[in-house]
Amino acid sequence: MHSSETESFDIAWVREQFPSLTLQYNRHASAFLDGPAGTQVPKQVMDAVQYYFLGANANTYGAFLTSRRNDEMILSARAAMADFFNCDANEVVFGQNMTTITFALARAIGRELKAGDEVVVTTLDHDANVAPWRALEEKGVVIRQVDIREEDCTLDLDDVKRKITAKTKLVAVGYASNMVGTINPIAEIAKLAHAAGALMFVDAVHYAPHGLICSESASTWRSSSRTKCARQRTLHRNAGKRERKYRS
Image (cartoon, rainbow, N blue to C red; front, side):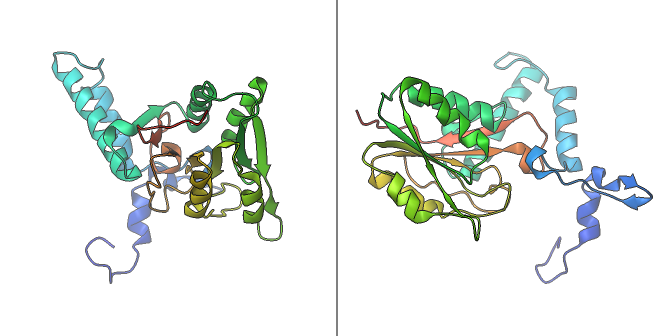
């Protein structure tokens, strides 16, 4: 695994990187993989967090060593996330968690919407990508919810096409379901949304650790979470293109 693709997957070495996997329960090695709540954290990440508190814990933009280190870490993290999202570094936003970020973005977009405008959400999504948009119903925004195919737990794409209309201002959809693992055809849905002149918001929290994130267009936001990517908690990120066009 370390030096050649032909070598076998070294499970023992991988487990050694995660101290929590040394947990013993009833004298057996145990791991509680609660995906929706987070993931296991490798030693390298713990070391990086410790380094920050020992040598870079300061306010930003100060004229002293720890502040400069803090600034460098923030810039480095932003550049890494830009590479991860395939976007510019100044298009990355850090926040408390995906739900909070989505509520903030929904409120911001909501200022541009009027009664009768429509937002499309899906039954397959985590509530964090539904409730923030449903909150816009208070100002008369109409929420259309796409159904699922119960036989295989996939989105009903015919229903997606029916729900996206000339009144649609935004389509909110998950990249992958945290409940059943379904991976949605994001590129296809994005084409439908953009053809109607709508924006696109993608909850990529449960997909991002497993696949490449593509920048579909200048009308798409992608949201992800550190707690699902073998990272320390408390920091989540959102990425979207700077240029926006809203229809009146």
